[in-house]
Image (cartoon, rainbow, N blue to C red; front, top):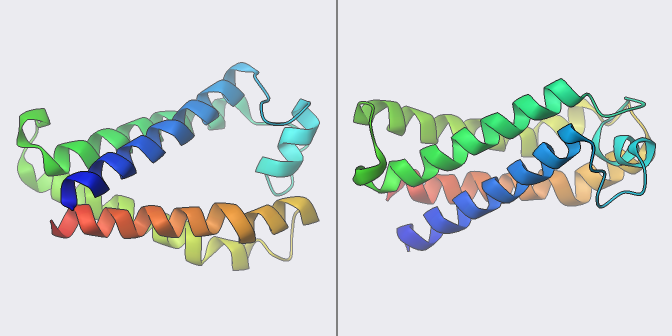
Length: 138
């Protein structure tokens, strides 16, 4: 079960990482334009902040590595306690993003983002947090 959760978590993180990387370099899929993507992916920006989006992509790639290394010793090159802290940090960030952020940004931003945040982004982050718990405990 832990191996499946690890692979699922890492795959989801890499997929979201690739989306953020594509957005950072100017590919606006699945939107039709930069403005459309900004309305769907940011609460109040008129365009995608490329540098910040690239940073998020890098952090997601690191999180995918931590998820894999937390379960497989052969991937580790740092002390074990850093990977335990890292996976619990991932759980905390995803849980906060999924459970707190939708309520914190509900009063600001556009309606499309708020709706997508409540229905897609936040539940996805909660699922990632739960997978992270399975990896951390396993």
